[in-house]
Image (cartoon, rainbow, N blue to C red; front, side, top):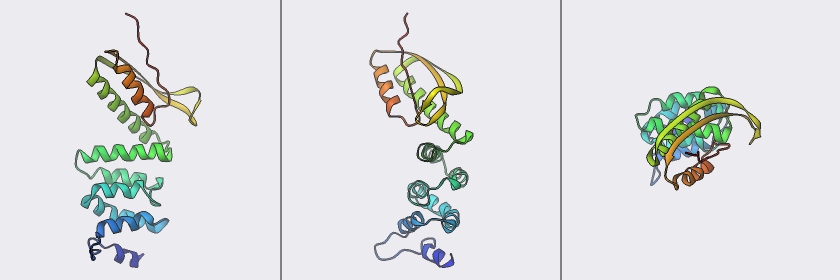
Length: 187
């Protein structure tokens, strides 16, 4: 591991037309196993400070993007300044839920609440009298996409005729939404 540290050294990789940071990131993403975790824990804070986008890629691309480092990554992302902290944390949590199907209550709740906030903001932009009623996690009537439980939400709003179609489109392309139904209530 010591020779590897010498190859990665903070800023020491500046060579002819080679960006040491990007080269370090490529090397870190290509590693697997125990050495990779140790090196990530040592060098990830430096990468996140120097180039946050590259830092996030360390945890979402390549061999090193494994779930056992999730608590470390979530804690590390807390050290970023806003608005990057919230944005990167949401992106990483989405990565964990969608790509690795992480099923821990804390991660899933954070993911659901983030998606719910996004959908509520969209509704508030295009509709009036938006009300959101969270019913919480419940057992599905039947298995959908290998899931047996879902987080139920009832959203009511008043809008023009075009918004429900747009909302239905957004529901269809949003990761994590298993089913949705838009109903026009009579007056």
